[in-house]
Length: 166
Image (spheres, one colour):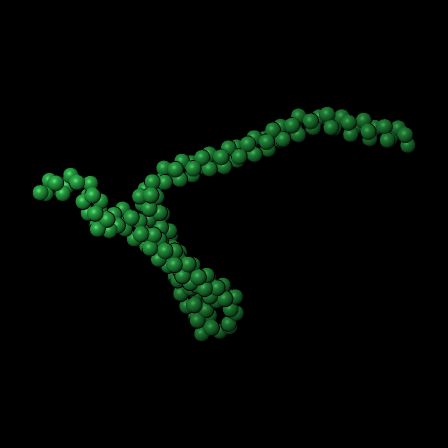
């Protein structure tokens, strides 16, 4: 009887339908939710980092005179610098975590290698443009050096003719 149920295609379809989502789509959903929470944390940390930098700039421009004012200014500056460095470290950590989640999500969706190859082509294209720009600059300098004696002769003849005319 069990063999009949497993070999009968109608029962297999019913078993698959009753099972609900496959684990791959559930994992994709979990990763997308995690990506959304990481993005929210990143935006929150970025705004807090901006606020900490504003406090650091304000404490840098504070011109309080006296012993107490200078100590208070040093305390605010040190606290603001510490806050900025902590927020920066947290943002870097979240960005790395986001990259890992995106890579895992791309692998599950089957677009990891497509994106990787596209990223490599973009990098090669940017490097090619940079090399071409450097090549044009070098060729321009060589042309200017090569044309310098000709231009000096032309200006010399022009000034010589101007002196003869006067």
